[in-house]
Length: 144
Image (cartoon, rainbow, N blue to C red; front, side, top):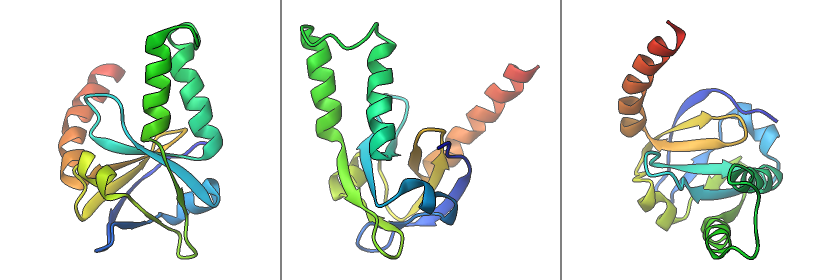
């Protein structure tokens, strides 16, 4: 599974997000949602169960592997697992984003859903648009 594409969506009054058709078959019946742990990313991450587990393993692999005797590793793993909420995808291909997650990522009504390989990212649309202005400059420098 490799998710790509950018889609503008609207949350309904209950905080439900209708998933873009391109992602519906890829995600299955449930997803794991958590606020992005990086300071510079003000979004929610959405993973399948398997991709969340792989991502978590990759987080620790980048630090030399998970060490259960390392207090910082245990704390980070518990924090990430604790922040991840399992959500069912309903028959209308929607997920109900918890209010706490919406508040953490500053999601109100207009959002942008971005496929980022192993996950989806859900951004406030205005925040995402502002970020893209910077990204375009970085891309131009990267490819020149």
